[in-house]
Length: 230
Image (tube, rainbow, N blue to C red; front, side, top):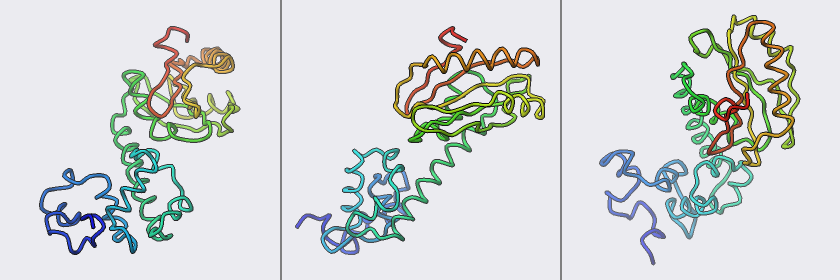
């Protein structure tokens, strides 16, 4: 029998995930060992680590993909009940929120990449399309972010009036348009270009600049400003 199929309590103390974290620090643990700590135990045939490896393998060892699994999907694994599934989902959601907070700490927008870092944790991995506005002051510091629409995978509807009313309320001097492409395709559509121009024209009448329109996917982005088509 391989070591991983033996109960963790029978492993050498230095190889047990909890003890390993205490003795060597959290960075010494693999993803499967960290998940094993969350679930606590495996099943009759697998240790918690072995079960965690199998769960990760189902997502090609990609934590972002694991974060997309819902409770029913996790419960399909023998040894994962509702309580353990909730623990995994909650832990991954905390990780996602930490990324958002870290991005928010860098409040000043200095480049298209800083917009991507701010918005990717929010919309980059969604299965549907969402359209957001980032409002900036005259120092390019973020005043607020507003979700304007949430739609199907084929597109969203955006209300220009809501966008500009919020800008006036905040005293924003500039805005950045951001939406995601769940398909992973970064190329802007004709509708994306038309909306950008419509928003730019409307904003100019109120002395509000549209600095960019960013299309976000899970791992990359497209910037209208960087590409010279704003």
